[in-house]
Image 1 (cartoon, each protein chain N blue to C red):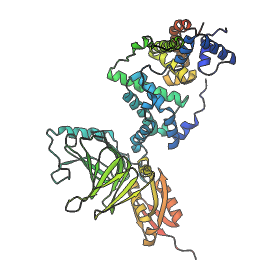
Image 2: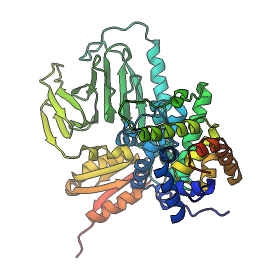
Image 3: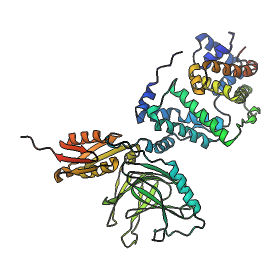
Image 4: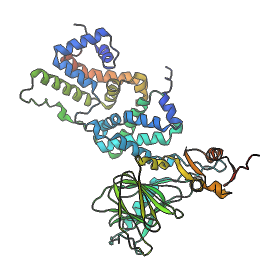
Length: 341
Length: 184
């Protein structure tokens, strides 16, 4: 039988053995079960004897988590005329929230409808052109969009998990059946068990929009008298728009992740009127946009931008609309191009 | 020794290509978790450090530089974080000595199969008992199929150092593997 030394063994284990060497090792494996076993062991040296199976680590969940952990690092680009504003750092916020909560000595029962007596503390807020990740003490992760604010009940840690938000936010709520997670957004009240969803409730939005990515939430409106209406249950892919009159319109989309793209620095518009687009751009880039005529403001836009500068966005928008866009510092003016004669 | 041309994947990630990042992540995530586990002995802790490594890559992608292979970088980064965490927690690296116990001799298992399984256990236990650096070098070489320069990059040492760690590990395994008829 051909002699096997360390060099030939190393070549065999790294796939570089000659045909001769391979044949010799195979012959050995047939002759001695111990050799076959030892070779199998050497090929799996990194596999610890009592290690969990690889499937223990869920790749897609982890990827989503990593992406979530990095949104503040795909900075929203501020218009090139200004210095890039530092996107607020996150870790400090979580620590601050935790510290605030520790101060609470005795928990009071929090009225789940959030009456005036519910004491709130701000867990995070963003200015225009910013995004912020906030980790709450219960393990819930929140990413705030630009010009948004998240407040939590002072008793959050010990009492009911009650939070209030304004603006746009993504929530990945930690599961805790004993303490339901309740979110007040604009005129909507959202009850959650453990799930992922996004909410848009800017003051000037006419509706509160909730998109469920995983799990299940229930949404209901709060009439001005704070008498809650009947809740509507939403599931994965449901997009609910709650208007000021407390009626909920639910549509269903196959892929709700499209609504998460702002997390990764992407702005998506699907057949949206230009004035809505302008609104989002104002928040995103911290500018003022003036649309000179109302016909132009109603023109519909479908577009998607990832990490582009305002100048690039304006160029493609105005090119597509045949409009003239003039940027002067933080002011942008859009007007229809005069018709050609 | 010259630097190997930088992998295209790393270049794409540096330029902000999210799908390239996803590809890299999916290709290595579980394997790296297992690798981290071999240090930390906790699936959750392993997962955390691997996610930290990828978060750091994506966060600082614009300045991400890979000198050997992307794999070498990833294993090196996971190892560094694992060791840092161990040092911080003063947790001892515990190797399960029980792995030396003979495989259970269930009735009806043919002798050959038993002998094979026992040999595999013996080898893996012997590797697990090696000093950390020898074990790392051997693991990267035989399980992850890396070249010497790649291992050097992953471990942050010279190629000469890699040779030494491998030689040290091999020396300790020599007797066992001769006994098991793998080498002469």
